[in-house]
Image (cartoon, rainbow, N blue to C red; front, side, top):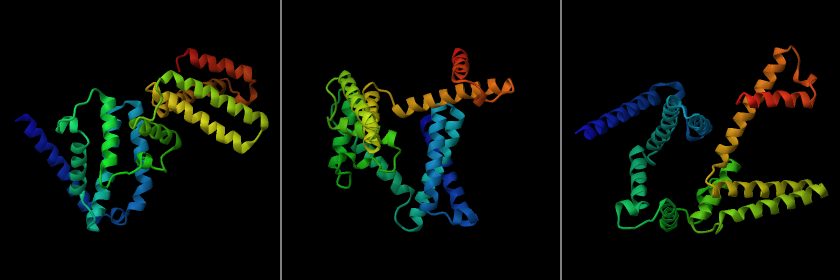
Length: 264
């Protein structure tokens, strides 16, 4: 009974949100003029704000940002209904059908050993779908940020068995790419240096993936760490009434080590 009550409450909240959006679309000058293209950059911004809240592990912020992203999803569905292309019911039904189809170990008789086998089956089923992606990498958007794109392409390839036999072997590849980069640096060929830097980054992303580290999360943690420590160094110099530019590199390094000792 409690579960049924919760379901009714959720559906009521969802319906109220849909009704509010209908009113805004009909009566608000800003909402009236929005299109898929005008909303697209705002959706990207909201997605990054959600990502930041997730990295902070801040429940209140996550809840807020999820609401903002949900609004955009509903807005696109609303526009689709106005052009008679699709509506939110179509979105939900297609998603539900896909989830059931791609989880035969739950909704059918397929047996799986672990989460990795679930992922492998997921990719195989995607390739079989009539309207699905025929290429393994086709589902990775070209517009995705490069670091995340590299990780997702490698993960997609892993899903069909294209991966290292032993994760330790990836470090030989990393060392190989470092040597190739150094050779191009010695020649000072700008185009080749850029190419080899890309290969090195790609191999490092591969290493992160093999060790179950999300490289984007890892780099963002370092970004935040650098910001905290740099801000502390800057505050220390300003507190003394001097500019960072007036200090030697050794003096700046001492302040940096002070920030590290503070746990920043």
